[in-house]
Image 1 (cartoon, rainbow, N blue to C red):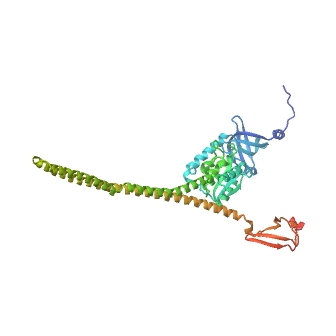
Image 2 (cartoon, helix red, strand yellow):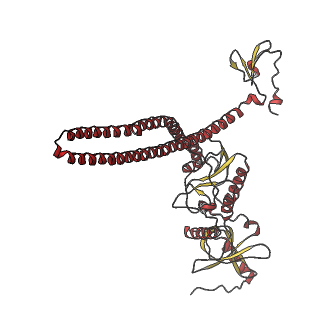
Amino acid sequence: MPTLNSTAVTVSEYAALLGRAVRAVGPATLEGEVQKPRSSASGMLWFTLTDGDAVLSCKVFRGQIGALEHKPRDGDLVQVDVDRPDFWPQAGKLDLIASQIRLAGEGELLRRRQALIDQLAAEGLCDVQRRRALPVYPRAVGVVAGAGSDAMADVLRALADRWPAVHVITSTSLVQGKCAPTQLIDSVARLQQHPLVDAIIVARGGGSVQDLACFDDERLCRALFACAVPVVCAVGHTDNNPVCNHVAWAAYTPSRSAELVVPSAAEVRRELAWASERVAGAGRRVGTAGGLLQLAGARLDAGRVLGASEGLLRERARALDAADGLLAGLGGHTGDWGRRVTVGSRRQYDDHSRDYGHAVGRLARDTRRGFQRRAAEVGDAVAVGARLMTERARRRLGDATRNATHSAALIAAHDFRRRGWLLASVAGSPVRSVAGVAAGQRIDLQLQDGGVEAVVERVNPMTESETHA
């Protein structure tokens, strides 16, 4: 059996030994479930951390609380950065001094994400019908992304490829971490106030659920929904879909955002060419339809129909007259029979003439009315089609003209000569420094509305002190 030291020590001495031994354990990162989080009167944060078998008490000093990535709640699965264990001899209590707390595990983050989506959907913030409509031809597009990020480059390249005349205004922001939601909200607010911005793209590349946690922030989601201009979120991908994609138009990837925000220049050119061809073809079709109508009228001329019918009746009358003469030359015993036949034939002729005349008249009238009605319908349809095609072409041409005028104004705005600057040159070479000219030398000055030829009287180079001022 081990021999016990017979020399007794005080409780304070032994507690000091325990304190030194505990401090020797050093820092660590622990993962466990938060229980009973609370704040003390002095502003310190207390909670216990357990893995189901052991329980440790943790505390965060008041000055460290503001730097926490996550403020723990009961039942949270977290990772805690422990600076050191602290033994309090006055109460015989061991506490862990924590400096950082993060949510641990995608399961907890996804649970919170879905809970927030359900809450916002219940309030109507996920309703597509309540989102602001995307413009067809935006004057300018605002882009929020990380400084120098691939997402920013992808969005700018996609916008330029799809609609080269687009005017882009950028605002950089953090896109990961605790401070990211606040900066994202500030960037969106600044772009919203710009007088030309008609749509905003918020872009970030893919990442894990933890990487995209800032886009699950409730404050950011509410700000995107309340933005005065439509917002397109090009964040994450279809498998990792943060909450912001449910309250704004979702492009999922930066390169696809341009398809929602700006038109396709190639498609606009094809539609303008198609409209021009339709307008030109409408005139040709109207002329062709008129010729067809005249030809059909000539073929269905009622007078010609009546003339043909009358000729047929005259032929029948001549035949009856011949039969009448033949009968008159027969013998006496056939005279009465012949007269009866003649009277009957004449009566039949009169009946047939009357019936044929009525039938031919009705046929001519019905044909003329049907033809006129069909001709009017064809003419109306052609006129309506030509008018619609003309209006559509005029509207598209007007939109293209406005875009071209806007681009020309932007180019003109970059002309430095309009702001009072001028271009100086000597013998056709631009002057970039006073070292390039000498007194008595002739110099050409190019202004906004013309040129001036001058002679240099004196050269005044800047002193060293003025250069570094």
